[in-house]
Length: 407
Ligand SMILES: *Cc1c(COP(=O)(O)O)cnc(C)c1O
Ligand SMILES: [Zn+2]
Image 1 (cartoon, rainbow, N blue to C red):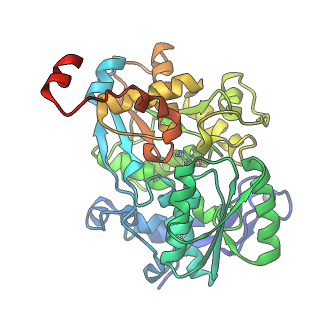
Image 2 (cartoon, protein in one colour):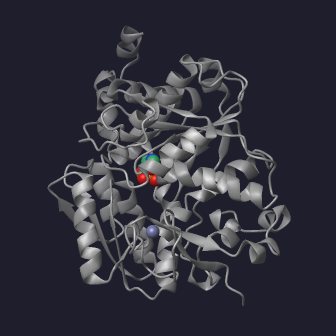
């Protein structure tokens, strides 16, 4: 069988490396990215072969960095619903609004996309232990897929995470290590552990493969819209990898002739309490200034984002922009989405909905644009954010009389 992965290549100086577990260039410390043999892929990959594939993101196996399908560890992640959001659209004055509901993945967030790819590749590279530095959702996914693959699994999290996130990670059986510090400190420690222990850290030394999983949100969006790219995307950003890769997915489809030319504008959504990428975009400054996160949107709380510059560049190149929203707006966003579309999202979803609202008010997105927003995590994981709702329920005696009294 011919291989489709050619190498890893530095995004800065373009030096190439064998496709092993490494993520930075030895010469310039730039991040590495997977290079594919598109000539080979082209022979087998078109709309028809995609449509014949499984109802999961593995229908795009040809453009994902796993050579042997026998190494795939899957729970039917991805190929999630693209919903025409008529109620929310009406509320905001948008005629063509869609939302991609990634709350329904196996561990309830979009992270299953990146983890199914990373863990499968880790198996292909003969690792026995998988690990991650997580803002919450990644922990659950690595725990689940690591156990599923028969790996030892370790997840490293900031000690102040939401209970729902910790529980959701613990139940699948990984060893959970909570660190007294923020995500950026957790991440730094994990880079040292990765160097010393020879483990597959999905978002450290396996990161080039991991990141490719996010492209599938771009592929699915195009396929589910009837093989075309939308006019606008609103994407929540933490490290900035998801945003960068959704756009790469659309471009790959364009370059392979699967969809017409991509003219999509990309918008980054962040919380005001942690908005290094949105700030760089809005101030037109390519330097990403690290911040100390202080927001209820913990899954997006990366103060020093690894792919911040690439996210900035993608947004600028595409003609898009950004919005940063307050914690109050995030909570309103969660409630608005639930009440209009029946989808209960975590705080990151609240960020995305609130950012969309702001972008519409600022006329950066207009009523006729085909707009897709990404709802990336489930609300049951961040119940603290809307805990006030349960204080307002009415308790009565089990009699018709008491019921009449409250009406
Ligand atoms: C991880 C995560 C993101 C975005 O992550 P990137 O680091 O920017 O790729 C978005 N939403 C949720 C819910 C997440 O857990
Ligand atoms: Zn380099």
